[in-house]
Image (cartoon, rainbow, N blue to C red; front, side, top):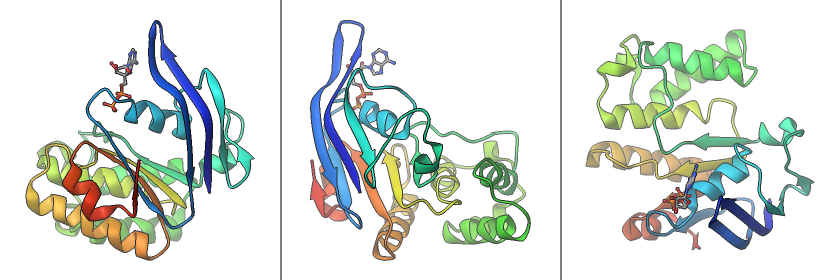
Length: 203
Ligand code: ADP
């Protein structure tokens, strides 16, 4: 599904990724395990198209990923390490905006927003501003925002940092269910126990 060949990324004099090659098959739950500073987020940002590589190639389902092919990128979902939600808006308003950015409209959008809120147990908080949410609730909403358009591949960048055990479990169970239903996941973490529980393969 995803093929990375000899990727290199430099920030000035610092080489964050050095000749990284990786193949992810459809249906995998792939763990990218490493300490802070290992280059995990950099690799995710390259796959998501947020930054260009200095060398190497990326291909998704055989199609080169570059700045021009947004069609391929619509098959990706990114759960960024930092919460990327509008704090002044409600949970429901946030999901509607993210859904619209992915091209959803009308009844289809409403349905996905409902499903998303239900999946992460936020139905009864739908009208509350995100800034009133706990860290764990924000993480759960952040996850759902990346899934509204039904990506084939989900990139999760340390999605449980600062999360209470209950929310962490809810996130794990949701990801495991989605993976059983066919979603391919790349999951970065520096927690070995998370990688052991979730991942079918670890790099
Ligand atoms: P991880 O996600 O594994 O913690 P990162 O990809 O965030 O690792 O960082 C890899 C290395 O690249 C680190 O040494 C980090 O300081 C450096 N780095 C990351 N982003 C930038 C940036 N925007 N500018 C300069 N250096 C960066």
